[in-house]
Length: 166
Image (spheres, rainbow, N blue to C red):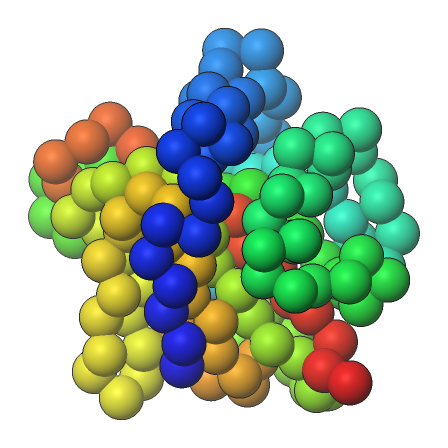
Protein backbone atom coordinates (compact mmCIF):
# COMPACT_ATOMS: atom_id res chain seq x y z
CA UNK A 1 0.00 0.00 0.00
CA UNK A 2 1.20 3.46 -0.84
CA UNK A 3 -0.23 6.75 0.44
CA UNK A 4 0.50 10.16 -1.07
CA UNK A 5 -0.61 13.24 0.85
CA UNK A 6 -1.36 16.54 -0.92
CA UNK A 7 -1.14 14.91 -4.32
CA UNK A 8 -2.18 18.05 -6.18
CA UNK A 9 -1.35 21.70 -5.59
CA UNK A 10 -4.09 23.46 -3.63
CA UNK A 11 -5.47 25.41 -6.58
CA UNK A 12 -5.84 22.36 -8.83
CA UNK A 13 -7.28 20.26 -6.02
CA UNK A 14 -9.72 23.01 -5.02
CA UNK A 15 -11.02 23.20 -8.57
CA UNK A 16 -11.54 19.42 -8.83
CA UNK A 17 -13.18 19.36 -5.41
CA UNK A 18 -15.56 22.17 -6.41
CA UNK A 19 -16.56 20.28 -9.57
CA UNK A 20 -17.42 17.04 -7.73
CA UNK A 21 -19.23 18.91 -4.93
CA UNK A 22 -21.17 21.10 -7.35
CA UNK A 23 -24.94 20.87 -7.65
CA UNK A 24 -24.36 20.60 -11.41
CA UNK A 25 -22.33 17.38 -11.20
CA UNK A 26 -24.61 14.45 -12.18
CA UNK A 27 -24.92 11.62 -9.68
CA UNK A 28 -26.57 8.25 -10.28
CA UNK A 29 -28.03 5.96 -7.64
CA UNK A 30 -26.45 2.57 -7.01
CA UNK A 31 -28.70 0.52 -4.76
CA UNK A 32 -25.71 -1.31 -3.26
CA UNK A 33 -22.08 -0.36 -2.66
CA UNK A 34 -20.07 -3.56 -2.95
CA UNK A 35 -22.40 -6.32 -4.12
CA UNK A 36 -25.24 -6.07 -6.65
CA UNK A 37 -28.73 -6.50 -5.17
CA UNK A 38 -27.36 -6.58 -1.65
CA UNK A 39 -29.84 -6.09 1.17
CA UNK A 40 -27.36 -6.00 4.07
CA UNK A 41 -28.54 -2.60 5.32
CA UNK A 42 -30.65 0.42 4.42
CA UNK A 43 -27.30 2.25 4.28
CA UNK A 44 -25.97 -0.02 1.52
CA UNK A 45 -26.32 2.43 -1.35
CA UNK A 46 -24.31 5.23 -2.89
CA UNK A 47 -24.36 7.77 -5.65
CA UNK A 48 -21.80 7.27 -8.40
CA UNK A 49 -20.70 8.69 -11.70
CA UNK A 50 -18.75 6.36 -13.98
CA UNK A 51 -16.13 8.16 -16.05
CA UNK A 52 -14.39 5.17 -17.65
CA UNK A 53 -15.76 1.65 -18.05
CA UNK A 54 -13.90 -1.23 -19.72
CA UNK A 55 -11.12 1.10 -20.88
CA UNK A 56 -13.61 3.39 -22.65
CA UNK A 57 -14.42 6.95 -21.65
CA UNK A 58 -18.15 7.17 -20.97
CA UNK A 59 -18.48 10.66 -19.51
CA UNK A 60 -17.37 14.11 -20.54
CA UNK A 61 -16.54 14.73 -16.87
CA UNK A 62 -13.42 12.55 -17.21
CA UNK A 63 -11.43 15.67 -18.09
CA UNK A 64 -11.50 16.74 -14.45
CA UNK A 65 -9.47 13.76 -13.25
CA UNK A 66 -6.58 14.30 -15.68
CA UNK A 67 -4.40 16.09 -13.08
CA UNK A 68 -4.84 13.12 -10.71
CA UNK A 69 -3.86 10.67 -13.45
CA UNK A 70 -0.83 12.76 -14.37
CA UNK A 71 0.46 13.14 -10.80
CA UNK A 72 -0.14 9.44 -10.05
CA UNK A 73 1.66 8.39 -13.24
CA UNK A 74 -1.40 6.65 -14.66
CA UNK A 75 -1.70 6.36 -18.42
CA UNK A 76 -5.27 6.81 -19.69
CA UNK A 77 -5.03 3.69 -21.84
CA UNK A 78 -4.39 1.59 -18.71
CA UNK A 79 -7.48 2.92 -16.92
CA UNK A 80 -9.94 0.02 -16.80
CA UNK A 81 -12.48 1.91 -14.69
CA UNK A 82 -12.82 5.31 -13.11
CA UNK A 83 -15.77 6.43 -11.06
CA UNK A 84 -16.64 8.98 -8.45
CA UNK A 85 -18.48 7.63 -5.40
CA UNK A 86 -20.56 9.57 -2.89
CA UNK A 87 -21.81 7.90 0.27
CA UNK A 88 -24.08 9.75 2.66
CA UNK A 89 -23.44 10.12 6.38
CA UNK A 90 -24.74 7.56 8.82
CA UNK A 91 -25.25 7.74 12.59
CA UNK A 92 -22.67 4.97 13.07
CA UNK A 93 -19.85 4.05 10.66
CA UNK A 94 -21.21 1.66 8.04
CA UNK A 95 -18.89 -0.83 6.33
CA UNK A 96 -20.22 -1.68 2.87
CA UNK A 97 -18.62 -5.13 2.79
CA UNK A 98 -15.14 -6.40 1.98
CA UNK A 99 -14.66 -6.78 -1.75
CA UNK A 100 -12.27 -6.35 -4.66
CA UNK A 101 -13.27 -4.06 -7.49
CA UNK A 102 -12.61 -6.78 -10.08
CA UNK A 103 -12.89 -10.52 -9.62
CA UNK A 104 -9.62 -11.30 -11.33
CA UNK A 105 -6.78 -9.79 -13.28
CA UNK A 106 -3.74 -7.75 -12.52
CA UNK A 107 -4.84 -4.29 -11.39
CA UNK A 108 -3.88 -1.55 -9.00
CA UNK A 109 -6.71 0.20 -7.20
CA UNK A 110 -6.43 3.89 -6.34
CA UNK A 111 -8.68 5.88 -4.04
CA UNK A 112 -8.40 9.66 -4.19
CA UNK A 113 -10.22 11.42 -1.37
CA UNK A 114 -12.22 14.51 -2.34
CA UNK A 115 -13.29 15.62 1.14
CA UNK A 116 -12.07 15.19 4.69
CA UNK A 117 -14.26 13.28 7.12
CA UNK A 118 -14.03 10.47 9.67
CA UNK A 119 -15.00 7.82 7.12
CA UNK A 120 -12.44 6.05 5.00
CA UNK A 121 -11.33 2.76 3.55
CA UNK A 122 -10.87 -0.34 5.72
CA UNK A 123 -8.81 -3.35 4.66
CA UNK A 124 -9.03 -7.03 5.54
CA UNK A 125 -5.77 -6.82 7.53
CA UNK A 126 -7.30 -4.23 9.90
CA UNK A 127 -5.67 -1.19 8.28
CA UNK A 128 -7.90 1.89 8.12
CA UNK A 129 -7.14 4.83 5.82
CA UNK A 130 -9.04 7.94 6.85
CA UNK A 131 -10.71 10.15 4.25
CA UNK A 132 -8.48 13.21 4.02
CA UNK A 133 -8.89 15.49 1.06
CA UNK A 134 -6.22 15.44 -1.64
CA UNK A 135 -4.83 12.10 -0.44
CA UNK A 136 -4.24 9.17 -2.80
CA UNK A 137 -3.97 5.60 -1.60
CA UNK A 138 -2.99 2.78 -3.96
CA UNK A 139 -2.98 -0.96 -3.38
CA UNK A 140 -3.03 -4.27 -5.19
CA UNK A 141 -6.40 -4.70 -6.87
CA UNK A 142 -6.93 -8.12 -5.26
CA UNK A 143 -6.75 -6.64 -1.76
CA UNK A 144 -10.07 -6.90 0.05
CA UNK A 145 -11.33 -3.48 1.15
CA UNK A 146 -14.52 -1.69 2.12
CA UNK A 147 -15.82 1.84 2.14
CA UNK A 148 -16.66 3.23 5.57
CA UNK A 149 -19.23 6.01 5.79
CA UNK A 150 -18.66 9.25 7.64
CA UNK A 151 -20.56 10.35 10.72
CA UNK A 152 -19.22 13.90 10.94
CA UNK A 153 -19.98 15.31 7.47
CA UNK A 154 -23.02 15.02 5.19
CA UNK A 155 -21.17 12.90 2.64
CA UNK A 156 -17.92 11.20 1.68
CA UNK A 157 -16.69 11.58 -1.91
CA UNK A 158 -13.87 9.57 -3.48
CA UNK A 159 -12.47 8.99 -6.94
CA UNK A 160 -11.98 5.26 -7.47
CA UNK A 161 -9.53 4.16 -10.19
CA UNK A 162 -8.73 0.64 -11.37
CA UNK A 163 -5.58 0.52 -13.44
CA UNK A 164 -4.11 -2.37 -15.40
CA UNK A 165 -0.67 -3.36 -14.16
CA UNK A 166 2.02 -3.45 -16.81
